[in-house]
Length: 86
Image 1 (spheres, rainbow, N blue to C red):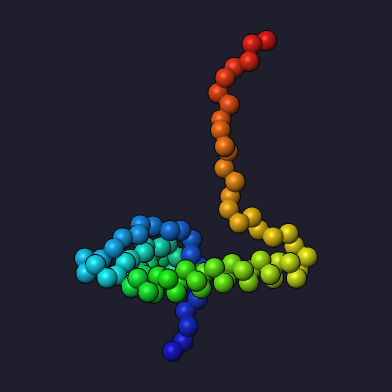
Image 2 (cartoon, rainbow, N blue to C red):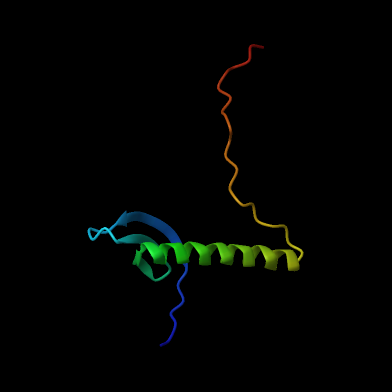
């Protein structure tokens, strides 16, 4: 079977299926929209595989003398909304 390579360009909705055993994930790809259906166990394996891929990316960056990517994007803890008098 020939492998088809696609690039994930966006994430859509996540839902459970009516059978109560499976889930679905809508994603946007370079080839158009795609729905992935999976069991609970498949989801666990997919999570593990994605985490392993992230570790590999970080390791490759270190070997290439590039700084590691941040684990999570930092969000502002608070917004300053007061106006200081002059």
